[in-house]
Image (cartoon, rainbow, N blue to C red; front, side, top):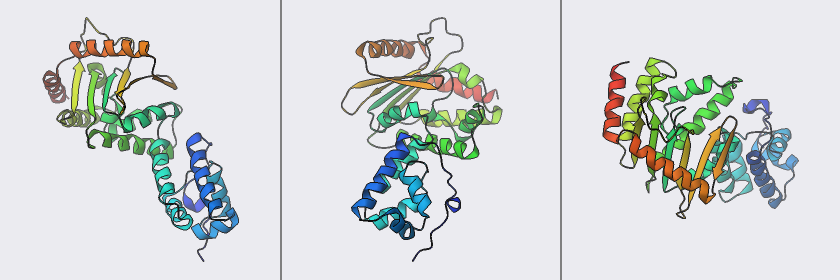
Length: 281
């Protein structure tokens, strides 16, 4: 019989419960009961203490990868536990208010993004993301930093997955001129942006620093076409984010994005500006 590990040996401490962890815990609980097992009977089979199993089921602990695999095997869960864990892992490093939008991104046909504060997460390098996260107050724990990095970089698979999602990004020049993380981080970032701009399904445009006409002064926003050919919008502020579905709100965002596309440099000129900015660093 497998010797149960203690909770501390897993490397995952208890956390504040949230809906995603609770849902995963309910999944484990449902398959445990289906198998006719109590928590006391399950824990030696998966190799974790009864307290660990209870914490996972109550949504108070992020399950380890080993726990997920053992639970899937022992409970004969038809892959359901693995699927639930993948979604949980993807969501853990994302702000709660952003998770619904991240779910919509997964199956989007098109995604239009205007950003005037920082490089969009889908286009960030790891070094740039670390610099951004390092400026967050209050400072996150090392575990929180890694979770956010993993979640952010995992989302970037959307850029190259097929069938392609069609991406349009419009970024204010000031975002790059800020040199978040310093010159070397910015050089790497510009190289990465130029690489992304070469993707067949992605247009990258820069809004010049001097822009007498600017339709994006109301702030950053996104527009997304779902697989059902419906449009959704998203706007974000301090500690909050809103998914928009009202036709009037979407009409306004479409008008503003269309205007921004005209006002920003075209993709070729944007690439030229990025190369000049790279050369000046």
